[in-house]
Image 1: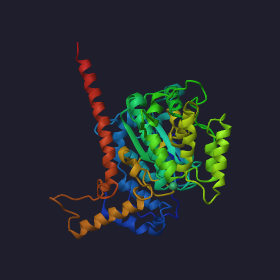
Image 2: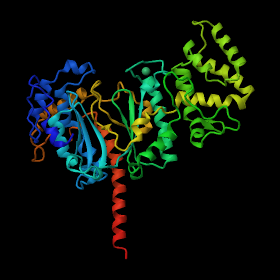
Image 3: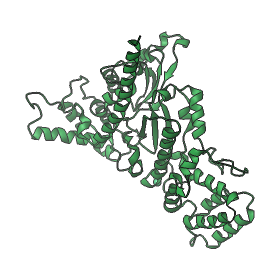
Image 4: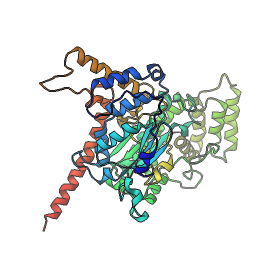
Length: 480
Ligand SMILES: [Zn+2]
């Protein structure tokens, strides 16, 4: 849908919706007061809904637009370029209408439109050869996607068959451990095997994580190259009813693992991240092989020709009865006792099992196409009210999605408290002879701050590379 058609769509908010907000740009605290008075705190406290008033205030005061611009533009706000103004934005409105092919010249234009539409969420697409908003005037050949981040999506949905703590839409710190090890391994593969440097990990707001790779070499990849990378990283494959999902040729003579998988599993007696996660998460915490369904799944993954050994294990585990059932750790030790006797046969299968339970389960379709749209960092997840915040890769394992992710309601309360404090201190209107606008960088006074700072640090490295590229080009142009 072209930009002109967007304007023709009815505003997402009907007459029933309160409209006390002044859309003018000069922020003032009365607007904030109006927001605080209007949004339904009880609904927000349930953390299961997002109030449209709160969303509007979030877009208006809290979302770090400049940082978002810099990230997409690969350059500072003073230097807007094609990477931003040829970039597609797609909006999902509160009434579920989906508006594609929007583009903007500056972060202010983008913010203004988001505030006008107050979408439930917005997504980021590729940089096209023409401006997306002018698509309707462009011929098909002159409007092609050219550049976009290489993206990955890991979702807890794909772990439903192996996690034991939660089901469905639930997520807790315990099953987040699967995501944490996936991040560690994918980060390692993308940096060491592909040489990418600018990786941004963003919590999806409910039960997953996205990775955006901004290296120019990654953004320029065509679809077939993206598919090749995904194919390489897609170690765990197959549908829910398929038992064996990893095939590294375990039954083949002389099978050797790819160095990347070997590194993740561990070598020379030193366990790698997957083996550690297998012991800590799969065996100890999730106890995946405790019940019959779990241990039958394990038995079905052992070397198929070892029927006698498998039957012995089954008899042993069944004889303990459902109540006295051995722990997963004890069962794995039983498996290892057999494996030690015939290592060349058992070891490859045991490694496949570790891979199947711990290797990143990526949603391959998200990564394969240059023109795929993915939810922007810092939008609010409509079902949880949580902000999709960037995460520091070194502390993903300690992140608790239920406690450590700010919600839009929480941020607005913090912002409101800050304004009230300014008023109490009499600093609200004048400071050093100037006017304090509490809504400039409002996130600065909320728990969103560390996440924005992390994002800015990430962006600074991208901008630095753009600077270097610019200097190199300049040097080339004056070099006779
Ligand atoms: Zn859980």
